[in-house]
Length: 327
Image 1: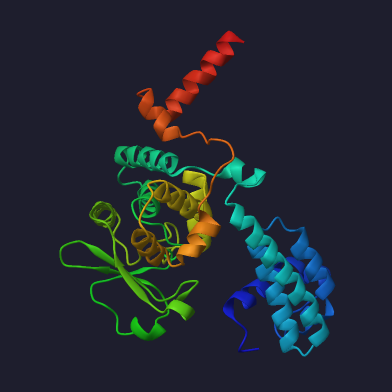
Image 2: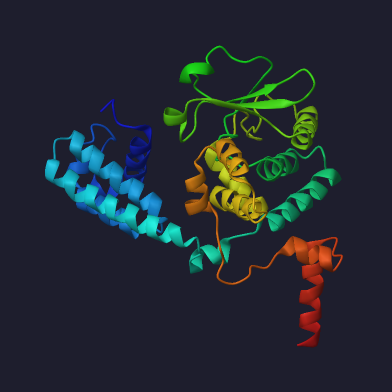
């Protein structure tokens, strides 16, 4: 099934990895097992705690695979489910509000900036620690620049623009290092590259300085490199770093940045420029990422500034100790 989109193939790989022993499936391809066990796969998708758009994507993949296998009735059945999920997601996005799950996990952009500064302090205390280096760099990549998705993973550092970059022929994304230690991101492999084509944008001077120092202390071929095995850091490991060191994910980072940016009442031209950098439309920014919380969210950075708190972790420890003493 050569013409199957990569996203659908990846979803099928996930079903296979999770269900193959229970279903007795020997190999991923041919995909005939999807037709044989479509009901079990559908139950598996429903049982997962996916966001609506992710669940819709899985049902779309299931319907498309079944269509290619010649099962028109099953294709229509699961296509209808995908369409219903898409409509539900759109109606929810129009409200631009948090549900209970999102509100519990969501962090404001100033709070994420404060975490970046904590990681900076950790890095400055141990600049030769490769993990501290990468943790601070990742935090900087996603807070000192409008956050893209996970394309910083697998990003090779180059000193000239590769011949295969334009025209969508490249196999990976690149970080182009200029002679003055400034950097351009060259994207040709991301979620929207098939529709939008490749793009190029400069990184901020502050972020460029952090990258340069990171590379001086930890020379490598890739912007983010695995510390044990070498080679590029995978998107999954990048997500792990964000979760462990910043307690967040890509969607929260993008949502927090856009919500913070829009709070300044930007002009339409500024919204369009930001959308271009973040590789989506203004409508997507408004409906999928900008949030209007029903109740005010605690802003850690603003709180620290108001009460002159220099170290959040020590402040929390002191509050816990005081609470224990008074109880």
